[in-house]
Length: 222
Image (cartoon, rainbow, N blue to C red):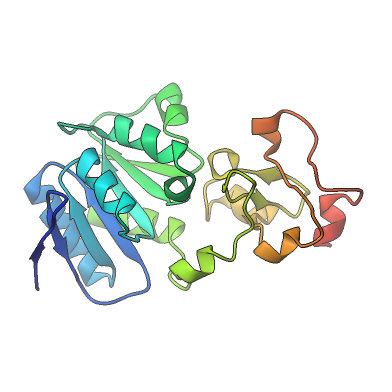
């Protein structure tokens, strides 16, 4: 295993090359190393950061990852603070995130972390559970280039739609791969969907009708 010293406060550890890369954010060296070995053995490329501040620096300066494993209790910038900044940044908000905590989070706490895009794993964690949760939110066949094919709002936010005619941002959509996600046929709105000047909006964020022209979305998906 080759390890490089990273400018953002932790080692970048390339494991077996794969389409999906995971950013592990945890102030515990032993936890980061354990997750790096676990994910590396499963074929993921792993990047480490010692806290939220260093994780943000890595992402903002160009590090591309497909998922984030985020500890909540850290010095400098904890997981709550990192998540708040992440969700406000259109480019970073799109990254699926698994939140790791020693306590069971309340419904209110889970909502503040956006349960639609963050799966919670309680510490101490089981290796198999982490792998299962990660597999649910990461589509290994999807590359970063594929993400660019998603339709974006004027604010640069990608949206999802369902076969039932609903439109939502990631924070208000079902968890990717969940029973509700599959049953309702959720998927990212593709870039070509906006060629007819259609402007989609998240129904919960906007609190009003979907702005998609005269045709109902369900008809467009039929």
